[in-house]
Amino acid sequence: MRRPSEQEHSSRPSLTALRVAALRRSFDRVPWPNGRAGDEDRLAAALLDDAGALEPTRSTPEGERFRRYLSERTRFFDAFVVDAIAAGITQIVVVAAGYDGRALRYATAGVTFFEIDHPDTQAHKRRVLDELGISTDGMQLAAVDLSEASVSTALAGTSFDSSLTSAHLIEGLAAYLTAPDVERLLHDLRSVSAPASRLGISFPGRASPTAGSVALAQRVAALGEPIQLGVTGDAFRALVDRAGWTIVAGSAATPNLVRADAG
Ligand SMILES: C[S@@+](CC[C@H](N)C(=O)[O-])C[C@H]1O[C@@H](n2cnc3c(N)ncnc32)[C@H](O)[C@@H]1O
Image (cartoon, rainbow, N blue to C red; front, side):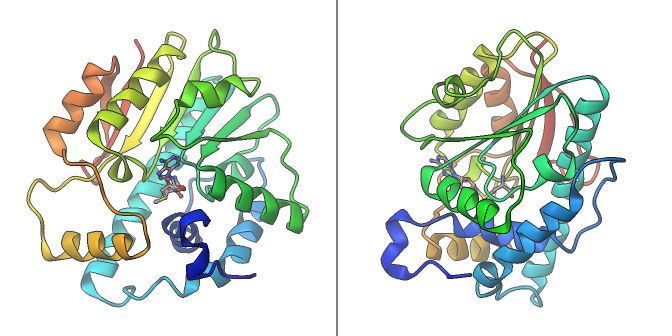
């Protein structure tokens, strides 16, 4: 597959999303009896050519730490989706989906995955799915720049029904938005969430920078996706609360992953 060139920098698909999808391919996943895990694997394999060149840190200590964190994060969001489907939720909203393949892996009759991301990434993902002949049954892709428009505007162009309970995943996005943008996003999602809807979100966790977190920040900035969020830990949890969500659970493995309910 053709790798986006530097000339396309301002209008290219997300390189961090490509990299995460490629890394995720080697992780153990939460099983699901049906679904189309093979299609997710085909998608990730097709993206490897693009992502391979972006993976310089795998053998360094901070690269390994990031890998371990991503593995826990993957397990957390896999379980979040599986639990939601098992609870009878039929609308899964994947905000900043990137190349997330859960809509394929956990495809279930009667469940719709609404994937939202920046127009450049959405266009590329759609093209790769088409080229591979992967069915998008049960998936609806909506494009929006979340620093400019709301997620509810994007959902309005889909069959999303705000009177039905939904589960929202926001994985690996918060760091790339400002705190006010994240708060606005969570408020907005809350406004279209029926009672008993759920939110799963990851956020950067270190109040003071470490060598590893500085290296990671420099790496993603070099990819054209600089970290913007200035709050971590308790301040982030307070932001979730202000946006109308009640945090009900976290990951035992890392404090950077929380589940919240709409009440
Ligand atoms: C690190 S990737 C995570 C992708 C996916 N959630 C995952 O974990 O595989 C960050 C994602 O956020 C998206 N993103 C960042 N800023 C955005 C914005 N302003 N509007 C829409 N999407 C954005 C990128 O396009 C990218 O897909």
